[in-house]
Length: 350
View: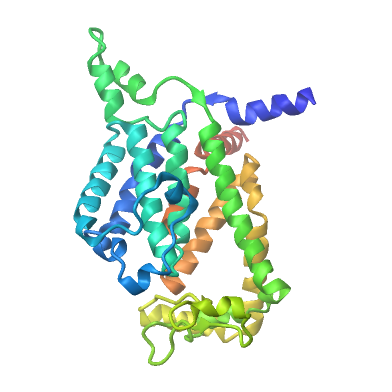
C-alpha cells in the first residue's frame, strides 16, 4: 500500500522545470483565436431566433452560474470584445490565471450554444478543459508578462541570467501535465468506446469510413450531403422534436481539393483496406491509456496520434490541429535527445 501511494505521489507531485505548460498556454490560445477569427463578432453564435431558442438548453455549469443563455444579439459585440481581450491577456500572460479561467468559461459558453444547435466541437471540448487545468497548474505562467513585471520590480541585481530564471521559475509539481495527459488518454480511449457503443464490432467492417471517403458525405458534390438519420419507430415521448429537432446526423467530408478527394475515393474502393484501417483505428483509440506510460509507449502513441490526425486532415479536412499541438508538446523530447545522444556516442565508440 505504501509503495502504491509513493508511486502515485511521484506520478503527480514530482517536480521539474519543464516549459511545456507555458508554451502550451501561448500556442493554444493563439491557435484558438485563429480558429475563432471566422466567428467575427460572435453574433451568429450568441443570437437565437424565437424558434431556435426553444431547443437551446444551457449546460449544468451555465445553469449554476445563472448566466443568460443564449445571449441577446445586442450584447454580441461586447461579448466578442471581452473574448478577444481575455485571449490577449492569457496569451501574453497578464493576470494569467484569471484570464485563462475566464477564457475557458467564454469558450464553454460558445460551445454550449453550438452544441444545443446540434454541432459538437470535439476539438474545442478538449481544449476548454485544458485551459481550466492551465488556470490552476504550476508552471503555466512561465513566459508570461506577470513574471516579467515581478522580475522588473524586484530591485537591483537584474541580469539576463536572472531574467531567464524568472521566466522558467523554480521546479514545480507535474500534476498539471499529468492531468492533461490523463484527459488526453480518456479522450482517445472513449472515442474508441463510443464506436463500440453505437456500432458494436460492426464498426470495423469499413462501411463507416467508406461513407466519408467514398463521396457520399461530400459537401460539394451534387446531391451528396451529410445525412440526417432517424429511427423508423419513435416512442411517443420523443415525438416532441418533430418538425424542428434532430435525432442524429452524420458528419461531412469538408475536403474541397479534387486531388485529395480522388485519393480518398481510391482508398474507399478497396473493402479490405477499409476494414484494415477501421480495425487499426479502433484498436489505436482503445489503447489510449498508453499515453500514461512514460518513455517509448507515450512517445510512439503521441506520434501515431499526430499521424492519424494528419491523414484525416488531408482526406477530410478535419485536422484536429488542437490535438496535434497538444500531442506534439507532450512528446518527451528530452528522452528522445538522450536516446539519440547515447546511440551516436555508442556508434562513435565502436
